[in-house]
Length: 147
Length: 262
Image (cartoon, helix red, strand yellow):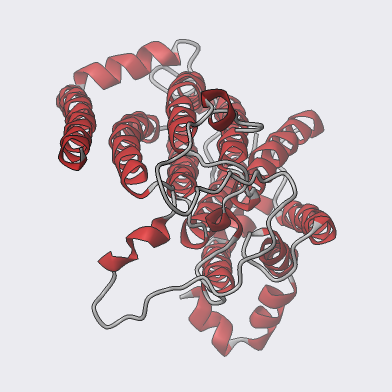
């Protein structure tokens, strides 16, 4: 097989995976999807590493990818714990909620146009204006029509 | 260096702009601009058009890639690329984080197939077992614990009008620069004049395609990279302890908040 062509093909695929992960990370607001895009960037780089290792008949590419997978696993564990704590404090996975951590001279981002809700989104019952909360039916508010 | 040469030489610049890779980048940028959530056009037809344009961009990229082997091998490679890159596009344009995680798992399956084609069999298996089997499952657990009902607003929007086209432009410029910088390599691949490593050298003793290459990988890992292996183990231990500490601290602070509220 033409080894230089194999190298070029795999580098192209790795670069496109990295670029797609880059776009997803900069664009999405859901903390979990941002992290998945970072993992996809790591996967693109790993493909390039293995391709270079094969081209130069060197084990360094595959060895480095083993450590990339290890670090990705450690990073995913810590990130999931952090995201879970943030989501329990704020009630949602939105990274806009934590935008008070931005630079001091920058304006806050506010959602101006909210797109229409889809039909399948449920509407929760409203609380009465005074007095205590109504007794909630546990089956009703733990029912998830889709995850 | 290639770009300076292109600026001096108008023929080279014309060739760089009209080659299928540049067209593929333009069409792919348009497709992603339609697909990534947060745009003004939402609805089934813009997503269908985005999918069609993604396929067209993939075809344009594939035209420009050099063939590296017999047709059977090439077709398998293209199929694996379609699976990997198509799942990646679906992952960043999906409006539900569960679907994003599942598309990412499919992309990992595709890249594991690509690694198997490279001859890195241990890494292909490790990608499926560790990445798709453990990391994505952890993601899905966290989504299960933290996901609100239905499609949340922040899954359908982005950070305003600027980041979507800016991010797509940045990624397109990055890919264009890479393709321009690797154009010498592509010329060498299409018209091999330098001596490229042949498969018979790779299958020699200690090579990456030797029949017992996995044993060689293990031998190299635990002899030359032994300290790195120990450090990686310590890193995993530290990550485990850290994750448990974060979770326990969160639970304790929530318990004290509940006690203070009552």
